[in-house]
Length: 304
Image (cartoon, rainbow, N blue to C red; front, side, top):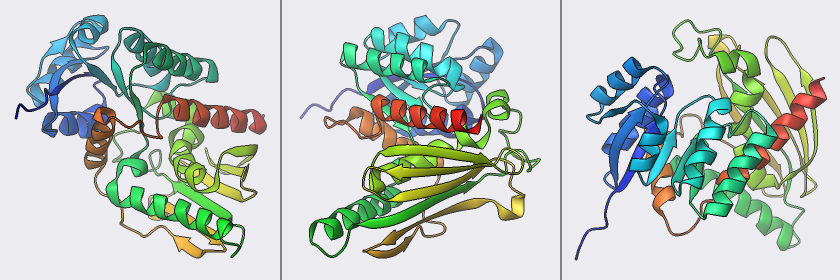
């Protein structure tokens, strides 16, 4: 039996996320040929290529022309136009969250994916970490089951709090990120919260938000299921207070996300690569990335 050909994947981006997550995952994945790296700084592209035994490309379009798929580890304002360009060239997309910095740019990516008929996966970490993904699926199933069997109305409420310490921890490799400085926790860790809340409680039909200390945003949603949810989203939490707290309450009881359940991000990214090569589309595609961007933009507008 002839083995399936490996997917030739090129990486756009050379920052900490590319070095710590994308590079190791692509280099180690048995179904991938890590074909090359492009970055805005040629010297950084050469350095990352050397780390993972691949080649540096001087031009993004040259890399796109040579591969089957592109993985993107760039700020959202740069990711979106390059992703749309790659989709129009017939390349599958492994994208980061948030999909774009504006709704218009996110829609352009989703439309390009649909028009070209290529596959897309947006990397929401917990949705591709095996243990975390199982836990999320279990809560979604529990809500549907209790709503259907007359035992209750499913989940009553949920919360998904991300207490990041990127800007209060001197050791964080992401502290110098200009787009995170500009957009804050709402846009950086907000997508993670939404990637858990939406599959369990349903799409958001009302969005409101309020500011807290530093970049903290309190996000409140009403979902199509009738449930409500809250999220505290920040990158300026004191390091001693950093962490994730997720909980659902309702007819199924109380479900709290277990501490330490998630594995390493590079392992989760390997799961995202698996999803990109699968015949069945993954729910976290460009259209889902667009919906998350729409909710983030609505929350930002509510903040005034």
